[in-house]
Amino acid sequence: MKKYMNLGIYGGTFAPVHKGHVESAKAFARSGLIDTLFIMPAYLPPHKKLSFSDSPEARMEMLKIAFRDFYENSVDFQISDYEIKKENVSYTYDTVSHFIKLCEKLILLCGADMFLSFDTWYRAPELMKTCEVAYIPRHNGQLKVLKDKADELYERYGLISHEINAAVVDISSSEIREKIKNGSDITDFVDADVEKYIKEKGLYDRFTES
Image 1: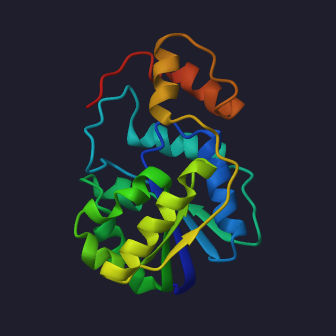
Image 2 (image 1 turned 45 degrees about the horizontal axis):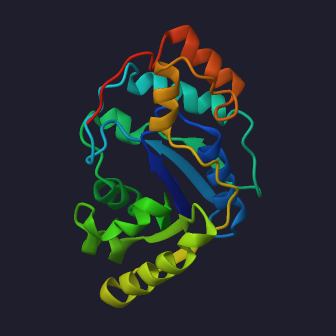
């Protein structure tokens, strides 16, 4: 079984994947923290119930399109279907417990909002003893609150965290879905071929979510 050195995992729903996701992954790869990167789409995130007009397979396909030319800093890269194949709620703790056996060090990449709530995640205290976390601020105004959170998580749980600078596209997947439903232009936010795929498959033209 292959053993990795410094494995980075970037998980999420990616419904749909947008330019901000790609830029974040590039920044993670350029950080020098990792030599292997897995993009890990969730089958079903624990914090929400998905009822979009897509499928795990469609989200995987969009990721393959968006990351088709990905090559950064000689980092080995793959889109992993590990969580999708499990066909169950995708708890990060379970994923980390599996992959930590295959690497020397594991670092999770997450956005600022997710990092600020990291200690509320499923089995968070154990998770923070197992892996490290890299986080990306959305804007400079978040720097102090994120640093304070990083210090708190280190003092309480021993979590090692890393701040990464990235050119953040200031939009969320939920905002893109809303634009699609309303017939608004999304050209600035998603890869052109991802947009073409969305239109061909009729994704997100109607949805509900909770």
